[in-house]
Image (tube, rainbow, N blue to C red):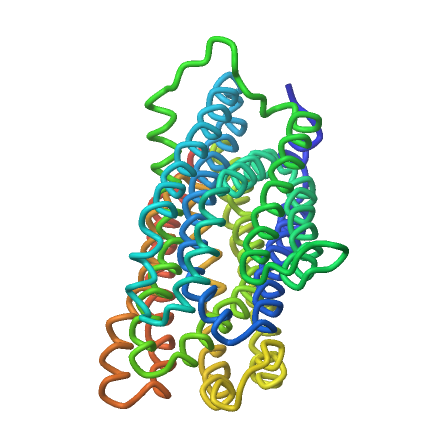
Amino acid sequence: MQNSSLNKMETMPIRRLVVNISVPLMISLLVQSLYNIVDSIFVAQISEEALTATSLAYPIQMLMVAVSVGTGVGINSLISRKIGAKDYDAVGNISTTGLLLGVFSSFVFILFGSFLAPWFFNLYTDDPVLKEMGIIYLRICTWFSLGIFAAAIIERMLQSTGKTTLSMVAQVSGCVVNIVLDPIMIFGYFGCPAMGVTGAAMATVIGQWAAAVVALILNLLCNRLVNFKIKGYKPDKRIIATIYKVGFPSMMVQAMGSLMIMGVNNILAVYSVTAVAFFGVYYKLQNFVFMPSSGIAQGLIPIVGYNFGAKRAEKIEEAIKFAAILACVVMMVGTLLFQMIPEQLLGLYNASGAMLEIGVPALRIISLIFVPTAIVLVIGYAYTGMGNGMVNMMGTLLRQLLPVPIIYFVAKCVGVSRVWFVFWFSNICALVYVLLSIRNTYHKVLLPMKDEKK
């Protein structure tokens, strides 16, 4: 029943294993973040209104990512723990159940796009042009959302057995398709009509479906430990509950970014449409910096899950420490970029003088929280690997939702230019929380596990 991936989890030195599993995840997440950036760059060539419309739709796209990734993380964690415990019989049921959960989730978003898209944009603007572009864009993204759910879930199945390179291939394939189609469908090249915002949405969903197809093929051909059970399959409530026990907090971790953007957009829209456009640009640039550290952190899920199932506390400890060092180094590089070339970064989006006035100091202020955020990410995903998603969820709540009510009062009292300092406070709170949590877990869980092995 064992294969090279399983042997890798069993025998490879931890530091090498962290790099081996994390690097493909880093690359795939970077490329995923890159195509969000490229999407916005192309859309910005249409008009600032088009950029604002897609920025307003972005939280719902993030919410779809949250549900798909959260479900995938629950599957990843459960499969890796079952493999670590040598319980291979449950894997087929888990895989099939995961796909069905993806189908159900996509149906929910199809309903949202069909009936609630106009209501959603009415929350932010009365501009008929913004609403028309935003509704078209959002409906296409939700109507064809099964692609993003299938891709995210099957990619996590590949990751659960350490096949992160194959997961990377699937994700990069979808991103490349999207990036190639963006200018063709937006501006009309090679006989394709110029479709503007509609073309941007269509390029996005085609890329997602391409990633799903490639991931499915690679899983069927190369991932022998994770098969789909079709004959005699019956949904198991215990499997669903276990997937969501870990996956729901991860969904909330992802969804909090969406909720934070919606909350901050509501606040900023009162003062400036340009500020809304800037915040959408900032968040995509920030994601590009965060993705490598997030890849390192997510790489801990199968490593920590496998060693937690095998009761190897010393391996868990070594993996967390090494991953934290790597993530902090990556974030330091990102901080330097935001400090040194903020004008050039915003210039990618045809930033107006007003956006540069708001954005340049904002990028320099917010980037100072990148390094502490790396530690929050690493510890949070390490807990996810141990089957406890609550620490990750609470750390993200402090980091992303705590700022919203504070930003409201700061903007009202001293203006928009000072709201960016709020992120310093919220991220320090999150850092203190995760450090206290891991200290408690070390003494109550990992040390007794070491003693048990003696």
